[in-house]
Length: 129
Image 1: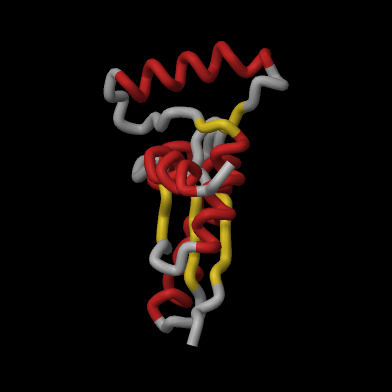
Image 2: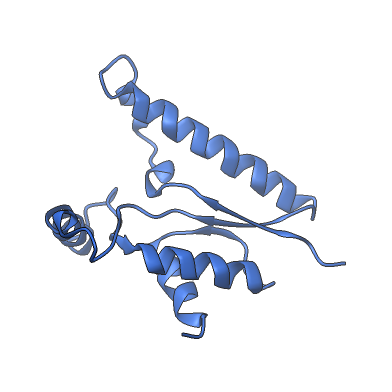
């Protein structure tokens, strides 16, 4: 039968391998946040392995829209950092891209797993306007 899809908005930073350095610092909340995101991702992937669920896990970094012009300076900084190859920075994605990617992923039975910014954009483009 058809495996039910499930969408989860994680965070690009869930892919980091160095967030233990935040333990015992004022940024310890970030480590706990990423541990929680990874725990959900791991559970969803375990359900996928048993064909109980088809996860669409989007891992956006900074999410932005034109309605919030104050976001443009960090959007520009993240975009430049990603394009020059800073290894732990992903390009920002627009809120519409994230929403469209989720809808497209839920409807495309061949899609499952973790989707970073390039795959979020790829999926979003498959949705008719």
